[in-house]
Image (cartoon, rainbow, N blue to C red; front, side, top):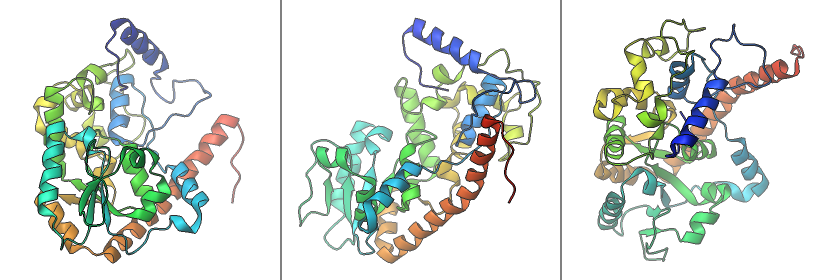
Length: 330
């Protein structure tokens, strides 16, 4: 499941270490000094297929982001009149030539009457902000120094092209409450297939066979799941479905890729907008006001706060397990 180096000796060492970490089932494993969880449904299933151990799903809350916003004070609050939309990390998810096509399409389509300015992050040699420009890039220094409070204060929305099934950048934007636009799942599948068929190692490394095909002796197909994993997990890891989580032939089968993308956080979380084309994205942006984005951002933050009630209870019980103390009753 981890990104594997090309050196064969290093790979062998890491695989051996990975196998030593595997636990067959909760009942059979001794009480340990670690509690392991994941925020990704796909990774939960992949780890089960690889090791025979089923991890609990615990949502990421990126508390460091909230702490940074609190430390920044009232000035970190988003301005309801902000008119910039950020294109985030597309240099990783998109091939270099298409990044330039994206830039040129947006630049030629977004004219003076368009209600928002389009800002590109991590694209080299792009013209930077000027008062008359509607489309521009962040300077290298701006990209490096862009803080969470600046993100919250400056940008009305963000366009995110995914480069794997789990992305910290998505979690960061979501917990801040910046409205997110993402390609439809079917478009994401075509992007992933293009990378996996023509590149090695990265991106989409969680789906690549050279990284994922690491089953251990504990990963017995006949081992029953210790509990119901939810989200159709029991059927997903049966004798035929399990090959998806080992990366076998995934890059040649769109339906398998789509099933993997459909259980990603960016596909399941509420209040994320989808687009089927660049023209459709720009049309949707033009129809939405700053007030619309403010409502969406508030709904995203509310979703995170409600989920934290479950997450905090998991951490409370994990702490009790690790310290060997009884839980306090309310």
